[in-house]
Image 1 (cartoon, rainbow, N blue to C red):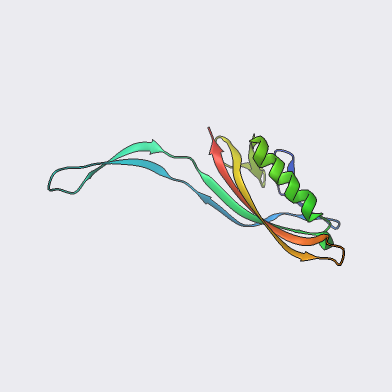
Image 2 (cartoon, rainbow, N blue to C red):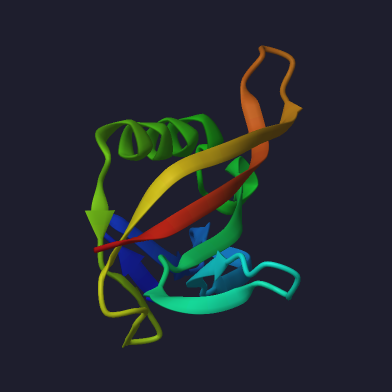
Length: 129
């Protein structure tokens, strides 16, 4: 097992490839700028902002995963507003849980009956405080 987020288990085995690529974590801070007449504005640190994680997943019937079933699973999680701890390699990412404000689906290949054979999912997660 590579990691987990709620009921999602990232794994690679002989029968199934269910993992991610292009994992990126961004951290931000919040700043206010106060205008000063005839001078540059004065920045003021307000505190940390919410972190963000993005990654891609490839779903393929040839790799043991039904793309449409997985797309639907992620859509339900976005629509339900699920927030979970993200663990990868036994390491918890961040202090707080993470939620998915959106996902983006790209359906690549279909068979002659209209079944999706492979597709890509882009996932965006934000820190849930």
